[in-house]
Image (tube, rainbow over all chains, first blue to last red; front, side):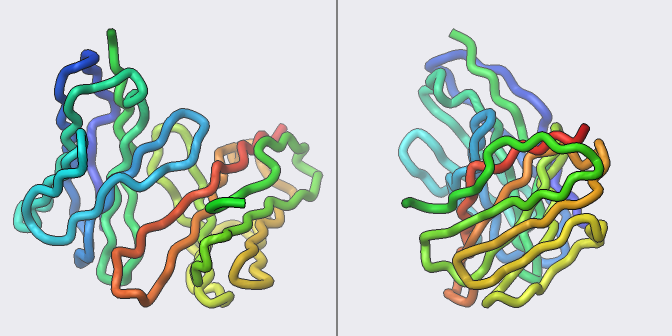
Length: 109
Length: 115
C-alpha cells in the first residue's frame, strides 16, 4: 500500500528552527509537496521537490532524498504565525496526490 | 473573486436532509477535486474531474453525488448522510497536462455537521 508518515505534533520556540520530517512509500514518484494549513483555513502551497537536494524559499526550505523516501521541511526564525499544520503529499505514478495526516506545529513565545 | 471559493462555509443538516456544496475556481484550471478532511487523518480524495469528466471515484458512498457542469464549477450533492460524514469538505483545482508540478489550489472548505 501507499503510505506517508510524519509526526503528529511538534512544539518549538519563537525565533528557533524546526525540522518536520516526512517519509513515504508510494507506487512511483513524481514529486513531493509541502502545504501549510492554519486552523479552519484552506491548505496553501509551500514547496515542491522532484529532484534530490535542498530548495530554499525565504525562511522555509525543503529537502528531498528519493533513494531514502524522505523529505523534511525546515522553518527558520520561527514566528507565532507559523503555528499551523504542515501537510506532506507525494505525487505517485498515476499523478495522484497521496497525503500524510499532517504535523501540527505549536510555537511558544 | 480570487482563487477557489466554496459555499456554504458551515452546514448543519439532519440525516434525512438533502443539501449541496458548491465550489467555483477562478484560475482557469482544467481539473477539480473534492476531498474529505477528518481530524488527525490524511486528506481523503473523493472525486476528481478532469476536463469535466469524472476520472476518480474512490469508493465513495452513493449518498455523495458529484456534479461538474463546466470547468469552473463543482458541486457535491448530499442526501441521507450519517453522523460519521461530519468533516471538513475541501474543493481544489489544478492545471493538468502542463508538465507539472500539478500544484493544487484549495478552497476554504465547508465544515459539515450531520446530526
